[in-house]
Image (tube, rainbow, N blue to C red; front, side):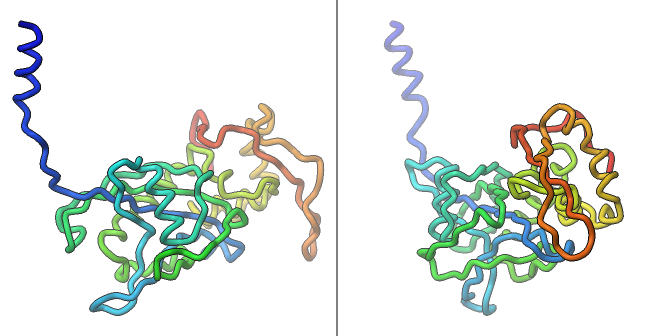
Length: 251
């Protein structure tokens, strides 16, 4: 009797018919050595459009039947942008599933974000014909983004700007050894250019707790001299990059 009831329970549900395709799109952010207004940049693919000329898109692929979202995201960066992202930290951003987001078929996208140091990037020849280029977030051609990638990118920008105040995302984008001036510039590029008026001593005071607990560690060396002024002290981050502060920074 127990076997029959189980068999009947299973047979109640008919086989599923796929109604949509799954994709991943990846928003890759980095900091590049440019002015504060242009330093925070996103990876875009420039590709020929069928009607409106050249368009831009985020790296993305359809998910294979036996593939995880994480694996698909890494494959997208390799195939579309020529980037080896096997060791990158990726974070799921959100799912975008408007029926009209792709005119070719019903496609839902599980978007991801990635933050990587610019000196960690090694471009190889991508499989796709699109040309990968870095674009300052302040200069994104919003009207020229394909599909709903403008919506995805806006959400990714909002997420990262928010996390700067409570998560250690800045240290994903800084070099292994950095000065307080570089830390200030990173925050200014992503969150608020107005903090550039703060002195490096005041920036150090804000991170005093992390320094005292051994999360941000003085290296005992100074940066190389560049132009006038005394080179800044070098620091190294030793905390978990997925951790958070107990409270927001009082910028």
